[in-house]
Structures are given as C-alpha cells and as structure tokens.
Amino acid sequence: MANLVLFPVLGRRWWMLLLRGIIAIIFGLLAFAWPGLTLIILTALFGGYALVDGIFALVAGIHARWVVLALIGVLGIIAGLITFFFPGLTALTLLLIIAAWAIVRGIIEITAAIQLRKVIANEWALILGGICSVIFGLILFARPAAGALAVIWIIGAYALIIGVILILLSLRVRRHHAVATV
Image (cartoon, rainbow, N blue to C red; front, side, top):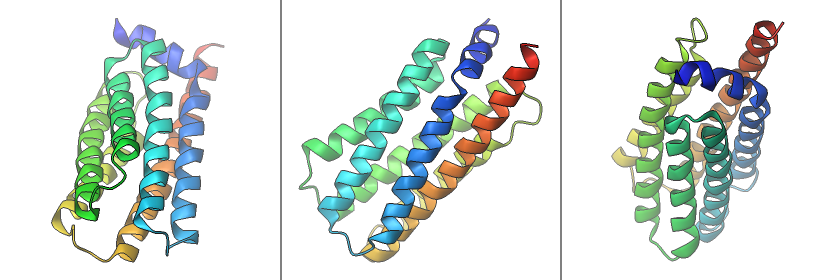
C-alpha cells in the first residue's frame, strides 16, 4: 500500500529531490571556495544545510506518507538545530555529530532505496547515496582529529556527491512518473 501512495506523490514532488541536490551542491561549493572558514561558520553552514535538507525531506515524507523519508527529515532538522543552539561545541563533538548523522542517514537511505526498487527497477542512485553517507560518517569517526582543512574538503566533497546523486534521482523519478502517468 505504501508504494502505491508513495511513488505518485514523490513523482509529483520530484523537484524537492532536485532542490535538495542543488542545496547540497551549493553547500559543497561554499566549503571548497572558503576553506579557511572558522569552525563557527562551518557549523552554521552545516546547520543551515542539515536544517533545510531536513525540512524538505520531512515535508516530502509527510506528503508521501513515507515514514523513512520523514525520519531522514527529522534527523536532519535535529542535527541542524543542535548546531545552531550549541555553536560553541568543540570541533571533535561537531565532527562526531556530523559522523553519526551521516551514518544513520545513509542506513535509512539504503533502506528507502530497497523499498523504492519495488517501484523503479535497478534503483541505484539512492543506494549509492546511502553508501556514500555511511562511508563519510565512518571516515569522520576514524579520523576526528584530522586537520580542519581536510575535514572541510571531506564535507564539501560529500555534499557535492550527495547533491549530484539527488539530482540524478530526481530526474529519474520525474521521468518515471511522466511515463507512468501517460
């Protein structure tokens, strides 16, 4: 039943995936353009990204009645709010929050992709995004004391990869929805 409701709603809101991808790419480019950002500015950028991405995912999940997507949204909102309400957190704590967020998000995305495969054959984009999220989180847990520049570049690269994957997924969903409604 969830798949019958889920895909038409996601198909009509394919642009939300596209917008999330664009926002992730913008965040990633900003991280590369200003590698000398202070930790507070990086915290604000990450918090803003996680909050906006979380809001869009939550809204899409609610409209689609898809608990998994809504959970990704809630997780992003919580991660974003934590960074705004506690900007004085140490770099290590921030990295651990980002790492945990990425791993949980990745596991949820992989689970969601497996469900989406029932609707779209050979769905790989969301699985790849989930794997990238888990790997990114594991790298941050393994090297939390890495230099700030390296961390900024890892975060930027992650955001760019996820952004491209979300854009590709949005185009696949849009194309599949257009064919399904004809």
